[in-house]
Length: 155
Image (cartoon, rainbow, N blue to C red):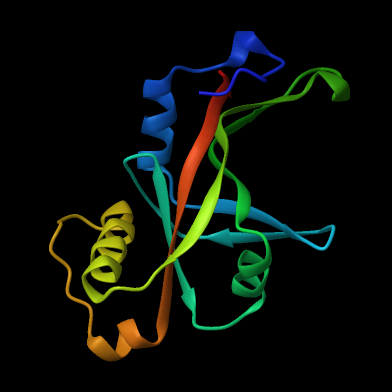
């Protein structure tokens, strides 16, 4: 967990962090290279304090991660807009996780299959998925080992 949260009254437990990440569907992954930020929206899988992603074999995301593998991420569980009489009193009902970690590419055949299975399990029931060799050869799989994270809510 992370102790830097300003609004301690909105901080959630470690159990809630895991629940949000286990139930989420979209992750925003932030990277930086040469002083420039880069943010991508990705599908993911979560297990054992790690986030798993897949992408094409080439592209800006991989180029940046080769230069700087430190990342920041967020997963948001959207709730609803809570209207008010005054514009500045509107608020949003939500739960979210923000965290930091280090990305690394997964190369081995078995390890790639396991990581892709974790991603699939995030979205589909079951735990036995098959991945054609041609698909694996054309896919990069990487994991973010989470170093810290915190969750908050406004419910």
